[in-house]
Image 1 (cartoon, rainbow, N blue to C red):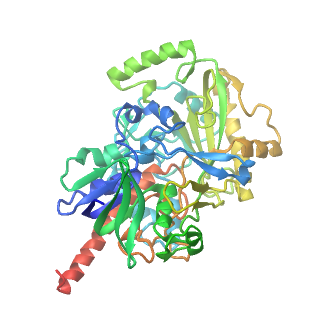
Image 2: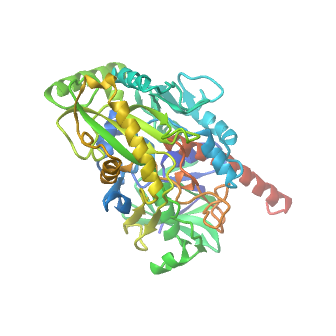
Image 3: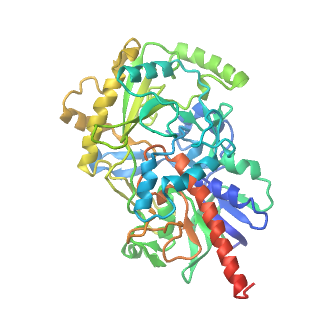
Length: 545
């Protein structure tokens, strides 16, 4: 069995893991190894923005998980696409750049997570960002992550803005500034009309660093824990089982589903659940895999009479697609640069809400079943999701091997109040899509034309809701008995082990989760460096070194 030593081992090359690898390897005196179960995360299927439609419904760069049957969705299984390559889900997502609401982070801090208030995390968002247009106190212009306005030049953006004005919504040109409430066109993580994944931003420019080792197709089986200390990682690559050792820390960044899985397979979790699978208990932490939650989402879909600005299956659409490909090759502009979810924003389900609790994603294509069900012709869609769900689910293992299926349960609509808020969200979104701005182009309402009563709305929500791809919380940060990591992201009871990804969120943020996952890793790097400096000082003081 091969064995090497590194200062830091990072498990998972996703949105957070790439940040860790790129930042920690800036110091030439430390060695860093990044383990990624998927492939290289490059090539046109990642770089071309509209190619996301290839990955999301398939297993191309995608784990393509399913949930267990959902009691709140009439027993249906949900679909959970997760990135499987360098860049992780930032290599297959819709690239919308959203940080969340100020209140999200102040709530984290109020739960006892010192250092995580909005004012304390804002510098890390700024540090990460290279915003092409916005230059103010809320934004960065020199970071690795490129954030720009869309290059799609899509006329449907104007229709969406007109509909929003018609319904009395405020129009925003920045959802990450002084306020969040309003509708508009999203900024995206693109660079010159191409996708800017976290791998492209943080990792690819530094692949030649001698102190950085990147292992792809390397699936972690477990973290090696000896006497309460994380000392290394066991993984399989090319059919061979390997072990590597960590001199300083193991950093777990496998995401909201696989970080708790790897912890449990390593002996960290609820002792009764671990013992059921014959796993030696290294640390009883009952919160591992609990507090799992996600934004429940419903999609309105319409067939339209015009093809301009939309994707679809038609002869005219195919001719236009070839023209768009030519334009993309020459200018990096046009429909090929679309992220599909071009417009959207944040609204309140009622005046009782103090902050927006609904998010919309207006899509320039007809979306059904995560693009796994196709329709002829052209269309548009509009997502509405609940931003602050009360429902909480679980991540559980079904056996003692990494190959045993994960039991993923977000428990959508498990709390009835979530469903009632979504009923309000349904009505508001339906009213927006029935605006005069869209009437001339909509030919057919595919799913909701006969839905009128609240009970009918509840039924279709249960029949058709699913994830909007923002799972979090399964290794939550906190100071209570169900917390998995402390406010410095260290796993309770295990030395030299941190979790750094969206799984540490105590509560999901008001918006898309990619930018927050990058922020979490930026902040983690500073904490790792501070803690390591403290260790070095103590060792020097005690004459150990």
